[in-house]
Image (cartoon, rainbow, N blue to C red; front, side, top):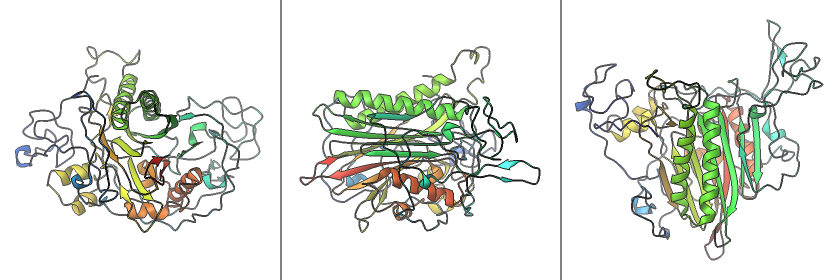
Length: 486
């Protein structure tokens, strides 16, 4: 795996213009910023932004070979008490008790609309103007075309989920709609085998536009949102058992980098590889935190391989072959043996929301973003950094043109039951602080994870749906003797 070394000055990007830096640079090649004036960022161990509870009893990780895992289990005293930072986008009040008629068939497609994930270039702050979810029947524009409305994932038809133990939301290219299907835009023309209406010519929704999965102890929903032509997010949810027979559940969520080529393929490959790695490691008895670390490495290798496919050309003929290589972010969670483990690279996040809403929620991940880097380097205050239009530009991702891979992992042992929210920025942009996320997560999320995931996607759609929206919910249950189970 070919990767660039981290700059000796400790900065991956210029503090002045966010231009990527090379090792040994003294000045930024784009804006001339004097890098010697920037304080070097000290290497910090993996740590989430806040502790779930203080104090708690933390289990020791089993013995492992030196160097096999770069991160240790975190302890409450090690964790700084910071909030998620940034400007909270306005959120609309959401009904957490319905109206939902049930659960759709696992993996069944539904129409929708979407937005790509974070990008290495500045993305700015999404406009928070609320937009209602339109009916499925499109309305003609002045030029005679039809605009497809996004579906409301809360209005799905209930059906029993398939009894599969594992499911990954990484479908291949969606099959063409049946020739006899009725166009969802004009409701008059028939859909040809190429997936376009014979009457109005409108392309029909693809399978990946809206995806749902539900297993015992975990559920996920992904929707393309209201502003983009395809869904570049992907997820994988699975359930397995440890060697002692106890259950383990996992959720992986990936967000394709829109400024890169084939971001949808990158997120799909990463989610599938990470999920498969965890399913192979956990039943062997690998410690969940080490298994998460290895899963992120496997996901990175899967994304890197997309840039090395035949026909892409060799580096000896094209030294800039990886300049726009497929890329994505990743965040995952494993609940096993009373432990809650998270791992991430990029700006997709994991939140902890306790069942007892009088207890504080927490954000468990720290973004690899321009704003977080400026704060860590001491160049800006948190308020200044998150007010900048470059705040959400990512500084870490999976892909052949990324810097040295630096997976972040952390382990927790909560003393109470709750639910882990694993999501892309398409959701957390509408509920950024942990307290905001806790307010929109339904009170019965642990008992109805799929319904709750649908509610959260609906919340983002109601807020404007400016990006792809993907969320997975993993309940964490503390038993009578304090043993965790999924």
